Length: 286
View 1 (cartoon, one colour):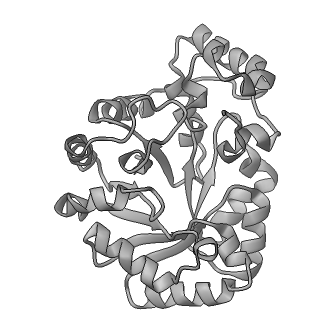
View 2: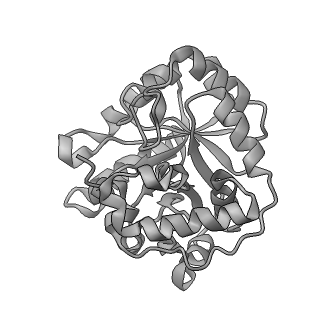
């Protein structure tokens, strides 16, 4: 199974469809316990996800059963040192090492200190503190620039039915040729693809016709949007892991069920090009 537990909700009020706020610690424990029942459980977190690393560290015995990927803070923006920031993450998680370490901000690698940051991260890998070094990106252009300068093992990309930017020109195949592990996030477009179209913020008025068409086609097939969204990314052979966040163990159980659903659906015609809508950081909801 490709599903990977996302944990932003454990430390932040995260996601446009999240009406419950931060997940309570007792529920975090139930989620972690359920996730461990699957083969090769993976987990995604970050220094910048509020209290997420601290919360996870309260369940360090369970956490040791996961392959954990965490992300560095925004180093340049906050004038932080890489080694100290990573040491803080390990301390909060109560771990001595992690499966993967990602640069959360691609500009940290592309800026003036990029080579220094990269070499510092390589030393952590050589010391056995991390198995795979990579980056979280938002655009194809960011990743191409990084690949011109650095050798990475892991990349996290946004990918969903409406956001197919990384699927063009054989780019994912190129990543696999470079032996880069691919983790896909935003498979529900931060929950947008699951919401009632008629109740969406006016900001999304421009794309309501596409969203309505998508939901209409799903209804004709008697599918749930979660099933179709997951199947789209699941069936892309180059994708190794799919990051999904949940607020409770019931949601996680449902996602496992949705993941295994056989889906026959025509995904063509739904792709958007406008990054104003594809990147949640560009959404103007206030």
